[in-house]
Length: 113
Length: 114
Image (cartoon, rainbow over all chains, first blue to last red; front, side, top):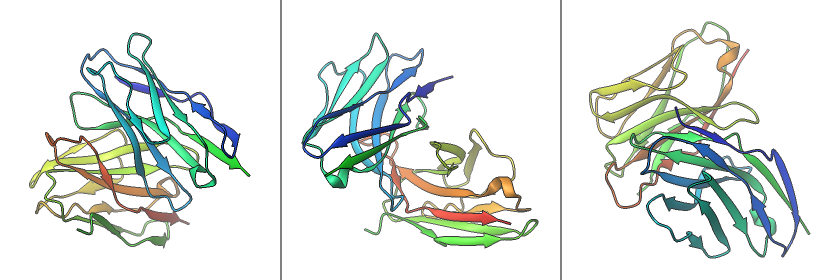
């Protein structure tokens, strides 16, 4: 069975600085998708970035980028130029052959002014 | 498009009561899901459906039932509410085989069982 592990329950960063959130996963599948979701206090789940496992190039969305290491089964999220609005829970998620998402336990990110 | 809508937003139940959480999507997505999120935890899959008339259990199905009579609606039924079902419930949908592989989530229902 697939598992997703986020080992950092809480992180903090100063505004305009860079922060990296860690995620590791376990699977025997070779073709899959990885996601980072943001959950602000409103509880809405917002997709931040996605990565297809067959693509070697790391995904980037504006200030958000990932470091995808397939052999190490690692999928970290880097947030550059952190903003106060980035304060939220961040969840790493895995999707394999089925269309079911497996979530990690989340990292609470606090951005300080 | 309204996307994925859920009602109610909040509900307090007494132990043993029953209720139905409503979920509707207007994106013509074939797959729909129900998740629960306990405090400080990630989302866990309760039930899912790959199309009208087809449902299957997820990771934590005990105490819940679902039905999918139409593409748009996927209600979640709690028959005998228990304190362990206090949680935030999310409905989600996806167009399986679509280009983005993105699950769209509803805003959630906060349920408290006392």
